[in-house]
Length: 186
Image (cartoon, rainbow, N blue to C red; front, side, top):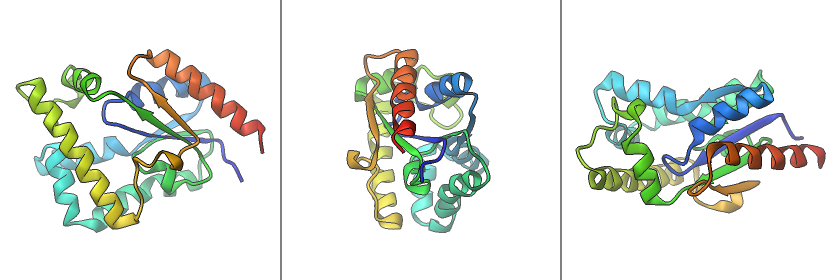
């Protein structure tokens, strides 16, 4: 059974937050973001987002709580966009999207994003690039250990979009069009 839920996973700085906001506005869907919750927890502990990912390796109960929060929220909500690394896993009856981006483009986006400064503060783009690569690896290892899944296995998704050379509007349009086709093919 398909639900009116779009789950957005993807590479770091692939544009999930921007695209989820555009989709929300156009479709009149609510947004649920796991990342906001994780950043809040990291900030409360006084940790960078990458250090918090390392902390989660030793605290799987917190990781499970974070990942289960999207599934619990979706139980009582429809017309929902879930921006979460494992949203596709937590809500298997959703339209599952993975957003890819070239690492250098990701660094450019992340380094200039003032909303990340509380939990991602770097002097140079090279430092930020190394951190993005490290964080991606940490997440993959942790998710495989805890859940037995790989977020970078593209067969998990209904749609994979490379956002490197696309505007957020173009990405939104691609996702919306494919989502509507997916809904029609019950």
